[in-house]
Amino acid sequence: MIMEQLQQIDHYVMQWFNELKYSLPTMLKKMDLQTKTSRFDLVTNVDKAIEQSFEQLMITKFPGHQLYGEEAHHDTQRLREGFTWVLDPIDGTANLVKQQDDFCVILALFYNSEPVLSYIYDYPRQKLFQAVKGKGVYLNGVHLPSPPTMPLEDSLISFNNKVLNDVTMHDLLDASFGYRLIGACGLDSAKVFTGQFGVHIHTNAKPWDIGAQFLFAEMLGLKMTDFHEQPIDFIYGGPFIISNPGCYEETLRILLQKGGYQK
Image 1: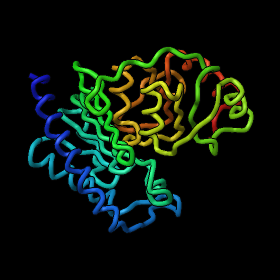
Image 2: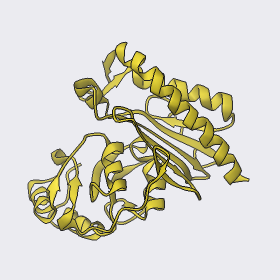
Image 3: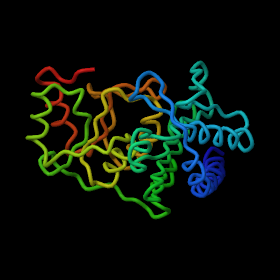
Image 4: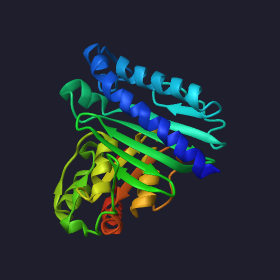
């Protein structure tokens, strides 16, 4: 029964993303910027409008489902029961504001705490990553295979260099092939899905930053844990790594061996 439900839910969500493709340009033209906790912590009316749009879809098509979103809906009491959506309406808001590029929508559905549907929508490049439990992973409707196993020395790695101590940061740079950072957790993670990056590290990931990555990692054979190889709670987030299996152990060893990271 759950698989039949997922197919129907996925159908409506894909329709919603298609509608978002045409409504976002108007939203972006009327973008209004606000700050939250600091001048670096930004939110726009676009973030809020997307979250409200998905909430309306949920109320109309999925009554009884719960929403856990970045901009509202922060009650965590019953999120482990039944169907719970985790949404980041704009991941990479600073990129949107400063570059009009490199931002995405992150959306995931959990059933009794298990990930069952996941989406990362790279709007500027019109790439929609989709994962359906028991069915497969897709990029714009085309099956996405697991990336080949890569050692760290052959891999590009991604992390926020402001929160790593200098020794750890340079050890990671020396051990890897090179460094890149997009600045939107969903897009950095998607590069790991495709094998373009070997590793993405986020030292303070919020639940909506990584909600979709659980199912993608599971279905693509990637490693996704905290820095001590323990599972991550989808309600609370925290330090996280998503990695090609060939990079995972060496990356964590370097990350922790000389004082680790700085929160």
